[in-house]
Image (cartoon, rainbow, N blue to C red; front, side, top):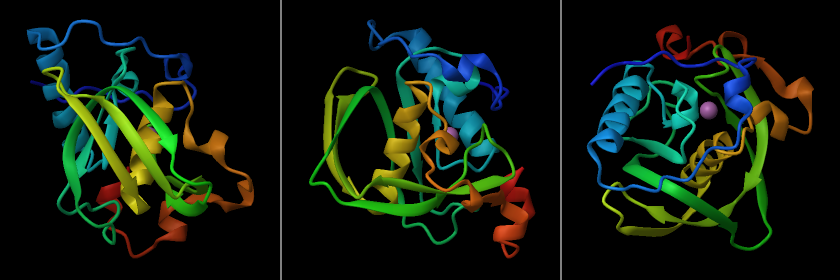
Length: 178
Ligand code: NI
């Protein structure tokens, strides 16, 4: 178990399409997931995708009871989602502020589907199928975008709404956003 270093925007490894996980319930997969949780928690993240630590696999994690980087967000169930697929439920979109551990110090206003259905499997191969809205839906869309090489600034429609967290949200704990 280890805190791994997080790749930052500009690193070409963040732009790859991730490979599906073919072997579930393996020691290697469990070790990767343990490292991902250690890394996410050390950085106060809401979620993390395997490509962010240089592993080009379709694995994302998310979840917290309270998050320093998003203090107003409701709790999210602690989840490991492998080989995920997302569909929009309806066509409503909503805009909201996002940050990313690979884009440290910044936040941007990003449009996302308001409601989604996501599917995938857990590390043992059991099916996961959930409907989500609000911040939960936003986090899943953000993390799954990492698996197709997309970082949130590439989803923004108005780059005047990209800024430094310390300027946009001066009340936030600065420890929570480096
Ligand atoms: Ni991210």
